[in-house]
Image (cartoon, rainbow, N blue to C red; front, side, top):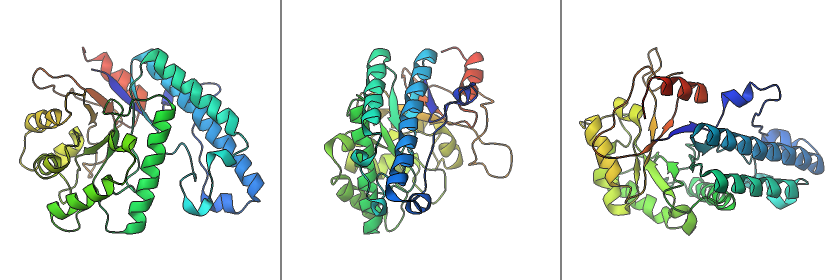
Length: 304
């Protein structure tokens, strides 16, 4: 089993010359002369590639998987901004850094994944939202290709269904219709995660109502299942999700509830071990607030 670092390394942020991601809002971009705005945006995207590269190297050194950030390319897929990577003054440097990331992944074998934001909803009844989702997912899948990741479930792109408009069958049918509009490389990576809210998609619903019609793997999230078990035990849900991965090594998610009144809030550190069930093996993204510090602390008390 490998543990996965999600997006940000706190260890790298604490260096004398820290590695931190940068963003840019459309409000800021549109308030500047376009050439100046493109210069700033390009420098921030180049920075994000450099931070991504350093973080993947950090993961290789610690035997972690890595979930890339979903905010690496601010405004690039935002229609109103009307920007492509080729428009950026730093385009050549960005492409060279992407090539360096690809080489590091090839040299180290770090497993890379992606979890696009909750605003990506393939089953939406809103046409504009679906179109934006397709643009975003295809762009990030193309980026995964550029950094040399396999176009299969070894490099999963994880989504929630995030929609309950209509019956389960109606939601799944809308999902399938829009899923089929995605590029092949994106479809071949897409996996779906169980939700934590009682009116959303549990493992049971995904396994019984979604997977039989789509054959898409189900990502098991420990905390989400604890919040929304839907009558299934954790062992039952884990084993059912493993079976959906078609022989690929599953990548699941682990966190615990933070102290307080909101059980869905993620804890800083893991205070307990989690169970592995049966003769199965899988990787786990550690969705804890203290990132690599939480993984290191957890591994001190766990024999893998």
